Image 1 (tube, rainbow, N blue to C red):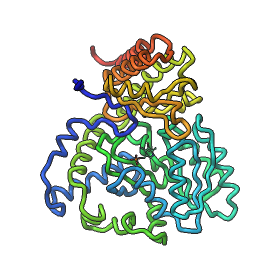
Image 2 (image 1 turned 30 degrees about the vertical axis):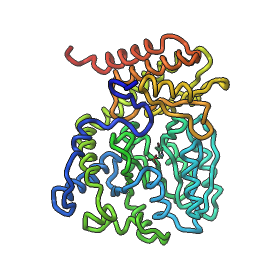
Image 3 (image 1 turned 90 degrees about the vertical axis):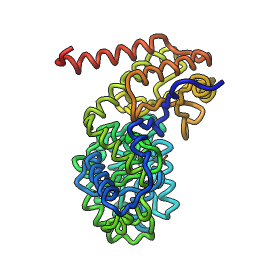
Length: 401
Ligand SMILES: *Cc1c(COP(=O)(O)O)cnc(C)c1O
């Protein structure tokens, strides 16, 4: 049977690529040193700083999120020095493994998987570091595996309370352009993101923002590196910004996606994500009443506006349900990852999404739950509609009809 209509992508990356972005990328190759491209690339890098909300510098790498994880590790920390990694899910765990592979002393802080990161635990770990070996604290803002967003301001306060000079490095891959993010205001020294989540682009670009302090440390850092070396990338030539041939079409796509974000307004983008996430949560809350499904995150206010992780009872196979949703109802849901493999599924709700897409995703998911015989409470869709209607009425009360 050949599918009809659009496929619903409800994975927390890659996300939907808007038609505008696809069209902007449909371009012939060109001389990347000529002004049309080089000026566009430069504008993208400086506009990305507006998205990160930093007066620092943004670098672009051809690579995915895993690639940019390596950037702070080889530019800010040397062998013999340490990083502190609070681990609370598959992504933070992989970042810690990468630091170990690169022969950095890696202090893992094993934290509960169903709660946001505990700033007090981070403070205690920093206080215990009497020799000041820890050069960077590596924190994932939204742990995509668990659907939990942690409080970056509270973690900055914890680092300050410990009086520790470590750099604050944040993975904002799943949160940039979905959750609030204010790099300078929040005292973040280095932040990472990737193209295929809130930025609505195809996978393949990674971004790293650094403030003055982090740039200064990168200048003198002696960790061996070449492709990822930020100092080379600070040169005047276009090929230096990308350390080789620039990803031409991807940059034209990035220009378009940045234009879309600024047209909507960054605050409105975040508000839209919250509104759609509230609808998902209203629906899942109803489903959970039958006892077979539950929010993975035990702290309601830490539930991510980008992705919702739903745990299933031990006798349920969430992956069979996901396959049915994908193959029969053209709706791709996220799998449980790490500790949650085979025990959960995830609904991604970030990027280029609107109300009917979210309602369609929830409806298809409920259909797959019903066909799979997975018990779920009634009224989920109704609750999602009610949540969207109430929110709209509240925000548009002053608008003319
Ligand atoms: C998606 C994601 C990554 C990994 O990105 P890839 O592009 O898949 O390598 C890392 N961290 C977080 C928080 C993510 O959501």
